[in-house]
Length: 241
Ligand SMILES: C[S@@+](CC[C@H](N)C(=O)[O-])C[C@H]1O[C@@H](n2cnc3c(N)ncnc32)[C@H](O)[C@@H]1O
Image (cartoon, rainbow, N blue to C red):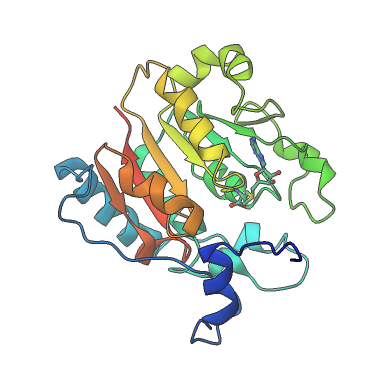
């Protein structure tokens, strides 16, 4: 009898179930009730989330959008994309230290940088240096006291240890790397071993994507799904400590 590879349930669903919209990008997700879900938002997260969403309406990112050469202007899509919400969070919190995991083309780093306080620092991590992306909107001159890039990999504990002091003093951590169903568990495991010194707000991108559902649902900390005011693929805010 010829060997036949058994299909995963996911493969069966994806090959047989059309997503009934004409959206330019569409993915599988799932719905689940709040009752019994670990991690409820408290008063601070609820009222802050409302302020972040409202203030995002008046955020102007046209200077950063003008750097994008062609294609859709994702920076100005709000809600639906997370850039104005990220900018609004930074404008509201005025953090001393922001850690970004996933620099890519620099969109989110620049949107946050624009609203950082004078002495604030963004440390953005990517395993690929910013100038390794042909369509980056970052320039050498963007890197200064307010913005630096590290190519260390925070899925690795030894790399986390190198930055331990800075990480433990972070006010905002924005997690936006691969969402491959493996990395995020490693980030969370590593961040769980740190002692954050200040109140730290974690921002999770893509929480509605299939690979992120388990992580988001089971996060047992005060958390708020901000998807309707952030990225269509899911934006989650978490009070880490
Ligand atoms: C979705 S993009 C980030 C988008 C960006 N934050 C934005 O909103 O404009 C994901 C990035 O994560 C990077 N990445 C992959 N593994 C990583 C890791 N272990 N640490 C940091 N970045 C990683 C990829 O190279 C890619 O540039």
